[in-house]
Length: 136
Image (cartoon, rainbow, N blue to C red):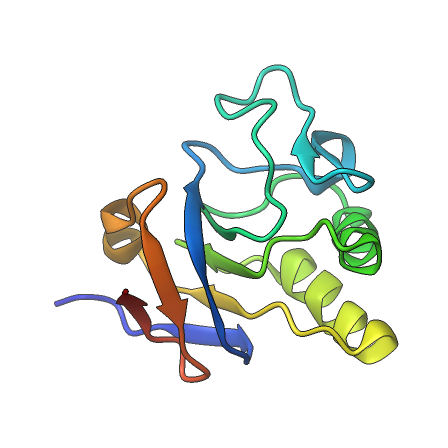
C-alpha cells in the first residue's frame, strides 16, 4: 500500500521536479544567492533548485539548514515545493520561518519512499494543499 502524504507545510505549487539521488545539506550544499547546489560530492552538483519542485530522500546536515532555506526564499532562489521520502524537521522549520517572515509559502510534504522513487526529474507536477502530487 502506498504511503499517505504527510504535510509539514501546507501550500500549492506547480512546476518541474528536480529529483535528487541523495540527501542535500542546505548548509554548505546550497548557494542561497543563486539556488545552485554547490556540494561537489553531490550527484546533482551545479543543478539549480530555484523554481523547481525539489524531491529528495530527506535533508542532511546541521540546524543551520533552516536558515539557508529561509535565506533562499528571501533571495527568490528557493524551490517552489519540497517533497521528501522521510520527514526532516529542519527543512520544514526553514519553510515555516520563511512563510512567517516573508509571506512566501514553500510546501513541504513527506510523500514516502515509493512516491519519491516514482518522481521523474524534469516531469511537471502539482502539489496540493493536502499533500497530493499530481502529474500535469
